[in-house]
Amino acid sequence: MRRVFDEWLAPFRQRGAYMFWLAVSLAVALVGPFGTYAAMDLPSRFVLWGATVALVLLAASLLSVLIRRVPRLRDSWLSGLAVGAMLAILLSFPFSRMVQAFAPQEPPVHSATEIGASLFFATMAAAAFSRLRAPPKTGGEPAPAPQPAPSPDPAAASEAPEPRLLRRLDPDLRGRLISISVRDHYVDVVTTAGRASLLMRLSDAMAEAEGEEGARIHRSHWVARHAARGIRRSGNRVLLELADGNRLPVSRTQRSQIDGWDLPETEDSQALAPES
Image (cartoon, rainbow, N blue to C red):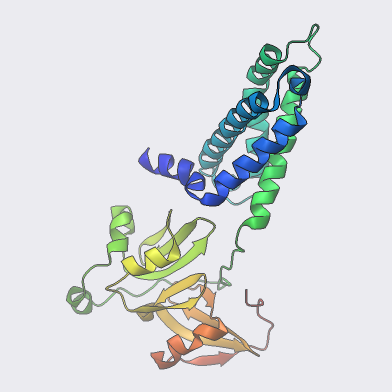
């Protein structure tokens, strides 16, 4: 429950979220939709629509967190569609009653269906805007047949303290670190025991990975040295092959980080995905 609560409020911990709320609230107050322009002055419209926009954003964030727990919708554009549809269904009738209370019209000019449709399309526009602003996902190219990572040397593992990052994971996922990658507001932490997503910045996750030797190879990726298995080159592009079968891009500015890792290199005649 605590994790759901943290994920729900995560977007509102960023300054940009408040600027977005202010801009949308002011725009809607100036337009004065559903008869509120004629029935209310500007300060009253700003209070009404500011509170309404805040409620919609909170509801949309909570629905998004819940929908992401459905595997097929987690990273799909259908998640935004589902959020918009559910908002329209849940809030159309209360909003129609609110509009009638603050801007009474007999008979009511705007039906719950019309208000629900407006909510749906507004949510779709906000979701599209959010996706445009989100950093690109720069996951590596998966190998066709991933091989399990070898078990870490117990003697070597006992010499170094356990990275603090592992304490954030479920006990059954606390294997040895392999990689950390950015995904929107989250980092995907891959260990020899599995994969987990944490709500934190990459820089903070790398700081908590202290105790496991590794390097940041890209603006979106950190890898543990023990997990590196080789380098694949195609022209100026470089991918680092890992023990779990994944391949992550190595940026030009970070290639010096792995120069001393003494890894076998392979020239790839096939075109690799362009580096982000």
